[in-house]
Image (spheres, helix red, strand yellow):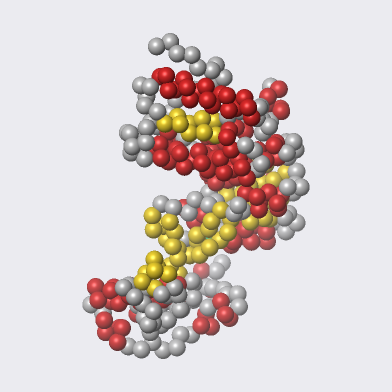
Length: 116
Length: 223
Ligand code: SF4
Ligand code: SF4
């Protein structure tokens, strides 16, 4: 499968989405990522049972934080897919990319860092 | 432990929106356990504030992070003595005790609360904390099977239950256990129903908050 997905994505592998904390997502945004997307296994199929449910709650928490500071909550998103579903991954990546392009660059990006 | 809950970010922003240099100060004890004011929450709140300021275009505002072992003891609070002066504001996310002690020690720096301090309680399950003690200063748990009617009976009855107790629940809320039902169940379990038969004398409330701010003074441990 030679699928095409946007090159704007930087993939960070984690053992389980349950490992992704609110702090990690905020750090990415603070350091200048235009959006953060957590992609976990299908609900009910987590190897550790609740990892992806926890991740979803944390993404929602990040969305609430973004809202509370006047930023767009759409910069954080959660998707679920089966690890063998490449085409769906490419579709979601395209969706996220389109949404972020609509929102424009991250205004929370520190100018000092982006210049470095 | 002392149970606290996070304050809405909007409220905290309102306190510090005109500051240039802010220290978010956490505590490693009670508030860490109730996930309101530990190192992790310091990280989340500080990042949130930094993002808020950048989003406002005022990104030269500096928001630093620090978490002390406790904020209710001199020696730990002294750890920020050499840096405290440089801040226009400290947002403390320890309990109200820690926030006040920080303010007392750093007299000329505004100290703002980042949490709402709620009660003395337990972690019933992850994400659920419930009240157990109101620090009345004259503990009577020996007579009530280890269950506190001051903190857990809505009417603070000492000779309960009242007529509103129904199927083990309190009349003010069907989800709330009737403290006196719990007391009776426990007295039965430890075979001490004789305690229930005795009428309680009027409790001495002078040790409670009604007598004004309290203190415990122990000469034996004073230096
Ligand atoms: S400052 Fe408050 S939260 Fe921290 S240890 Fe002391 S009592 Fe507990
Ligand atoms: S009787 Fe007083 S000290 Fe004892 S648990 Fe109840 S409120 Fe706390």
